[in-house]
Length: 308
Image (cartoon, rainbow, N blue to C red; front, side):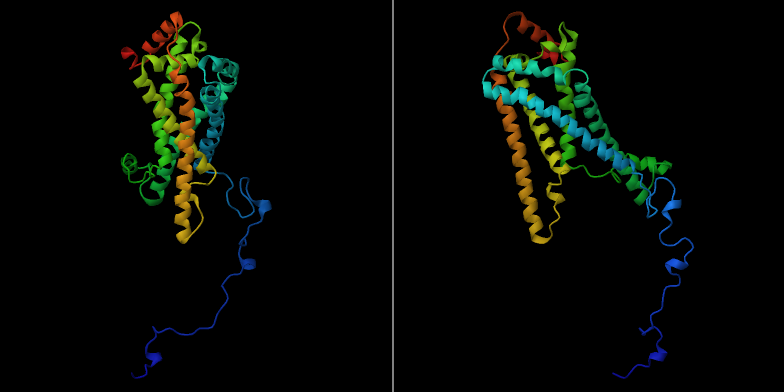
């Protein structure tokens, strides 16, 4: 092939001498790193804002509210499962429930361990989805400040995908609300209030309405234990998708973590059911006027009470 005259082909690559940048840090007006002494409040030495976004704060609220609610769950599984498993008797387990009840069913512990964390966890989770949706819309599409943005707000275009943990949380919410209504709200309409609610109250429900009771408790315990286990795995950085390994090792670790987390969730569910359903659920009907009082309470449950 004939040699090509490079002077006639200016688009060919040419070797050029390196040259310095037009402006060095010392020559810039403010320098690459502004004087931190003159930086406005809320910034650090790199000149970046140190104030956190709403997503950061909502994530922290959701995370730390679960810490408080987990403390309540630990006390609850002890009273409703572990102690009945050890005593193998509902009457023998009742004193332990009555002894610890004031610590998480009265002021100030019930609001701090149950009410406030529960509301904070649910509402922050919903707010997080909206905040992340709006952020995605601003980055990749229409924001909600325009009519077009509000139209897309109700579509799935910019909404973040729902993780398995979130799906369990959505399913758990009505189950927890139902549990609170049956065990805390309904008894308040009767003399003695929630002090009438004990392990015998649960045993009576299983004896008189076994299908509904078993279905409700099994769903609550199953969904709840899986949500709690996977949630804690996420906070601790142990979920399969949080592994930092690469290549073939990543897939092995992901699969191993998946089996471990689900195994722990299954073990926790089995343990809770063993005491809560295997012992308490088989305690039998409450006798006399106590049992009649329980029947009236169950008939007062909204929606399903008319069939009980």
